[in-house]
Image (cartoon, rainbow, N blue to C red):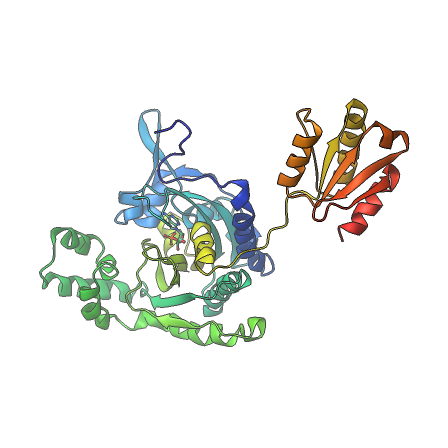
Amino acid sequence: MSSFQAPKGTYDILPADAATVLAVREAIAAPLRRSGYGYIETPVFEDVNLFSRGVGESTDIVSKEMFTLTKRGSEELALRPEGTASVLRAALQANLHRTGNLPVKLWYSGSQYRYERPQKGRYRQFWQVGAEAIGAEDPALDAELIILADDAYRSLGLRNFRILLNSLGDKQCRPVYRAALQDFLSGLDLDADTVRRAELNPLRVLDRQARVGAGATGRRADAGRLPVRGLQGLPRAGPRAAHGGRVSFEDDTKLVRGLDYYTRTTFEFVHDGLGAQSAVGGGGRYDGLSEMIGGPSLPSVGWALGVDRTVLALEAEGVVLTAPGATDVFAVPLGEEARRVLFGAVTGLRREGIRADFAYGGKGLKAAMKAADRSGARFALVAGERDLAEGLVQLKDLTNGDQTPVALDALVATLKEKLK
Ligand code: AMP
């Protein structure tokens, strides 16, 4: 292993890719910002119990994938594997549910950590933008969130994604269904791993075992589906005006999701160009989570969209987000006096909002012009002693080689005009 290797399951976002990554984060955030969601940041680590109680002891995320941190010899903290539990913890701590309107609507953007077997689209550090609407039970809120995610993906130019929708049942019907499912599973010839899973969390067997799923989902108690029914008309009605299309979704009775806190409405956004790691985002209702972590009853709904996989989905669809170059003007000074003057000119241009850079390192003309080309700048700003004596600089258009003298004090205005 080279000493410059990032840890397994992680990767660096380099400037060449950064524009796409930042644009994806921004595109997911934009619909939330105009829909009453306030930005929240929470620590990257939390008390480990928050996740074991919230996300669930029996989930892979908690039982196998948590990065725990040792504090004075005992494992008390964990890097966050997801955002919802932390956001709800922060809202409860700050009493946002008492002091503000319900639902408390929050959004976040941040890295998450899971000790997974790395592969394309599955990393040990990844980035999610998420939204949570805490403390209201209203199918319109579920619909709002689904529409906002759909709008975000569409605004990026994504088309080949689908929305899978299911209900996991509520407090009343889920235990009945769970018991019926356990009973059904106990009559099957299953491997040891599945038997253990069936005891701990039988619903998780459904999304692992297609064979079992087909027989078992028919037994789902119907009551918990009602919120989904209430929701179904809404996304279809809502967004028609927004992008001329509808939010269309598929009922997927096998959709379970890897976090225990979900109740009733659950959904996943899948992209068909991603192979095995096809889920680009997911979410649902978590009406019991607040109580699970020691808070009052606060029925809530939320989602998290994966930025890494959204970037891969854009690649798969051949969508290129046009990123503006990093630099408009690159200054090439010839001699010491020119260095001093052009350094000042570059600072002035930047303060006027023009993206400008400078040939650092005392380069000769040839190397400096090469640096100007590489920077992607539209113009090189070249000046030697003779130009300066006349109060001039040479503006060279790097796209066609045209060179024009410009008075130093007219530089800002000239460039603003040319860069329009
Ligand atoms: P989850 O929190 O498991 O519901 O995941 C929500 C979204 O986060 C997924 O749909 C993925 O886009 C993304 N995601 C989850 N785990 C990973 C991972 N290990 N690597 C990359 N993206 C992930």
